[in-house]
Image 1 (cartoon, rainbow, N blue to C red):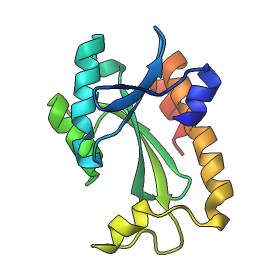
Image 2: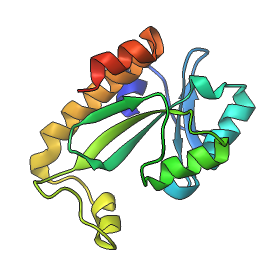
Image 3: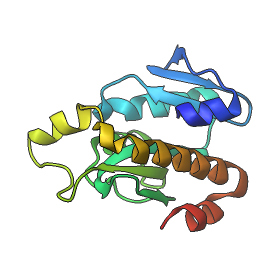
Image 4: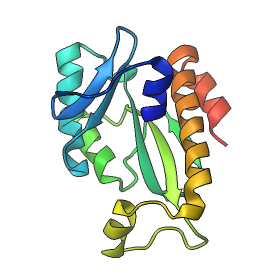
Length: 161
């Protein structure tokens, strides 16, 4: 989100609906400040407060089920075990929510399972992963820009792969 905010010259900081928000008439960026598994409440509050249609929402989040650096842009679908997306889907009462998944599973074995997963996702990236993370964030911002300006089909065709 920081890269997209930088590109669009949007200051994100005002607290609204338990989210840090910023934007203009074309774009509202939001970073929920709730626990991940309650982020759907912030999304729903912002949608209702700003009169945004669910079809206009794109949720971007990290995903341990994708290798580090991989992007997956979709119009809808199941949460795939992601607690934050489960919360969004439950709060909006639909799976028809566009999402950009950003892979964060590093190493040949991916992310650990069980209790070790929580520690893994809260830990900073390893120094050797920095370049891959920076490149992914640039591509993720590109995908969001494409989704916004050219539509979902073009964005998916260009940025999935």
